[in-house]
Length: 364
Image (tube, rainbow, N blue to C red; front, side):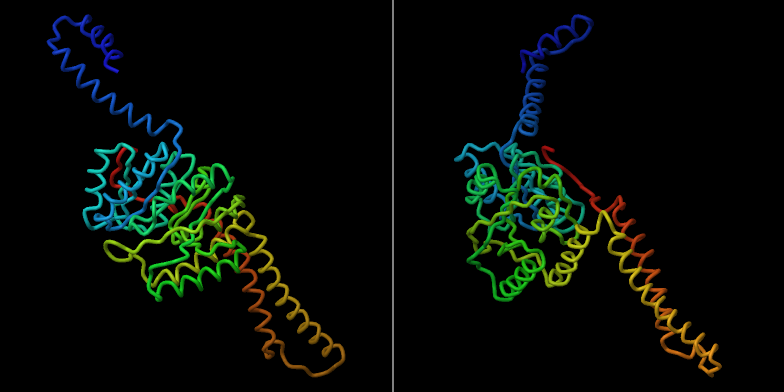
């Protein structure tokens, strides 16, 4: 690199004889800067085997051990790799730890959010930034084992899977977490037809094409296999993985996931089926309800005319409760047709759905 810079520096000095520059110092500094830049760019743009994406929130104690563990696994298997650590608005020293780790290992890269957005947001930014041919996601709490990475990589590259989800068959979680998890997974299997035992396992492997083709936000990280399947990536596998006891800190997920999760699942199922053709749903429902009201109103009108032509005294149409039911159906049908379509149109064209304030980056 220094040899490359020397002719350039000498040529510039020839054009200005008054420059009093210590050439040796200049070359050393330039060489150091460009060689380090070259190293970072080589890691970023060369064909990389694996990108490991780790979303985290207040995991300062776990990060040194986790990154060292990942490095040992990658080195032992001769993988080229990057580790993207997404700091989701941590209030501890997690970002400082990431900075220190990145100084000693250029494969470690970091993204810091200005505030806590949630796991889906962190994964989305990681998916956007990664460049490995296989993408591994895992949690930062040391409960996911990096020793599983080689087998997951093999299942993607050699066995042809689009996505492989971990299955923590033996868990070290309390019953308050395992029982709802079993119910949740059973419900998702029934609703989606995707036969995974642990849909929400943080340890997953993907083809690069998968993560570049999907979008996650809200609480949708729990349903990435569903989203991938709806995007045409049908070969989804499962691997039994080891589950470690939490070594540091406490779990970061609360009871709200049992409310937000099912709502996001319904959203995914609806958007994936009707997202590009909302009138197939809203239009048909609106027309159906409107027609029920219209037929009911027509029946009331025909009945009134029958009584009039036969000189039979009849009640006013407005005195019948069916009139108001018919009117309500027609109004609801019209509103469902229009409001639903406009609401879906606005949602699909939102520019802010995946906009997150990134405070800092490392090696990206």
